Image (cartoon, rainbow, N blue to C red; front, side, top):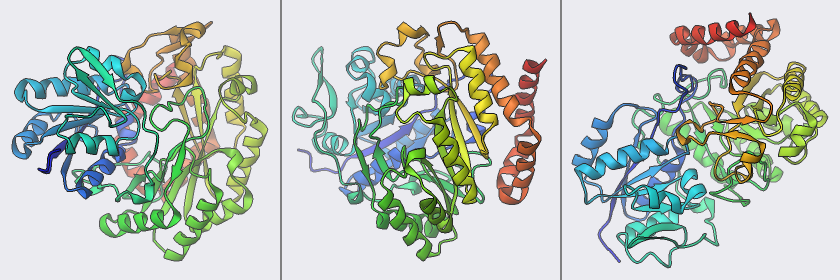
Length: 480
C-alpha cells in the first residue's frame, strides 16, 4: 500500500452532442456544476490526498488548459466522470493525455461506466480503471494502493493481461452525513461561471445541491445503474449547514436540489424546512417531487421556508402510455397536486417526455391537451433516450428503431423512433408541443412578470436574444 499522498486531476468532459445543423441551447439555458466530482475531490482530500477539477462544460474548447494543468500539477491519476453522451469526449481527452504522458493512469466513472461496464475497457485502451456504482471508496482504494492489488475492492474494473476484471458490486453504502461538503471552491469561476435553468430561480447567484442518492422506483426511462433501487439521504441538519456554508462562502441566494425524489421521506423534509426557516437565510430553493408524496400541510411549510418551485415528472398526458412506463400513473391525482402547489403560492414545473415506446400521434395529442389544461408555471419536454442502465434499454429494438449513437444520447436528440412514427414527424410534433404551450397569452404574461420575479433570468435572455429568436423562428416554420 502506497503511503505517499496521491494527486488526481478530475475532468468533466463536454462532448459535441447535438444533431448537425441544430443549435445547442442547453449551455445557454443551464450550466450545472459537476457535483459528483466536487464530492469526490472533497472526499479524497479528507483522506490526505490532493484533487483538482477541470470542467470542460463550463469552459469548453480548452484542451490547452488541461495540458497546462497536467504539466504544473503533475497528477498521479486523471479521473473522468462521464454520461453516455460525453463518453467519447472523455476518451478523446484521455487518448491525447496518454500520447503526451504515457505513465499517467486514467480512471473512468459515472453512469455510462456503471451501465456498460466490461465493454468499455475492452474497446478503449485509454481507460485504465473503471468505477462502477458509488465512487468514493473504490476511488480511494485505487489511490491508496497505487492502482494495484484491487481484486478485493468492490466496484472496480481493471485489466489483468487481456482479460477485463470486475470486482463486483459494493454491498454496503456510505452514510451520506459522513461525507465532507462538496468542494465547490475547486471549480474555476464558481459560482458566477454556472447558471441555473433560465426563469427557474428568483435571484442569483445560485447553485445545485444533491442531498440524497438513489430512488426506490423503477421507471422504464431512468438509469438506475449507479445507486440501483436504494435510497439514502443527508439529514436535515447536514442540509441546512451545507446551505449556510454556500451562502456564507459564495453568496449563494438560490439552491436547486437535484435529488430524484426530494420529498420521499416526509419527516426529513419537514425537519429541514423548520430548521431552514429558523436559520433565516436569505435563500430560496427548488426541488423535484412525485405527486403522491406531497400534501397541503407540507406545501405550506415548504413555502414558508423558501421553496420557490417544485418540478413534477409527469412524462405524458396519455394514461395508458404513462402506466406502461411508471408506477402511480394517476393523471387526475397529478392535476390535483399541481393545483395544491399553485394554491400554496409555489411555482409548478411539469416535466414531460416525447417518443417513449408506445408513443403515437394520438398519445402526443393527448399529452398536448393535458399540458394546456394544467396550471403549471414552467414546462420542459425531453426526447426519450434509452440509456444503457435503464429498464427500457434491454428490449428497446422490439418497440421501434434505435440508433445507438452514444454522443447523441442526451435527451436532446431523437435516437429512438417508436413504431409508426418517423424522426421528422417527431421533430415536428416536438416543436409544435413547445409552440402551442408558449404562444399563449397567459404564459407570455407570466414571463413578463419575471421582470420582477427573476430579473437575472431576463438579463440572460436579452444577452442571448439572437439565439432564442432563431429557436422561435424554427418553431414558427412548423406552424405554417
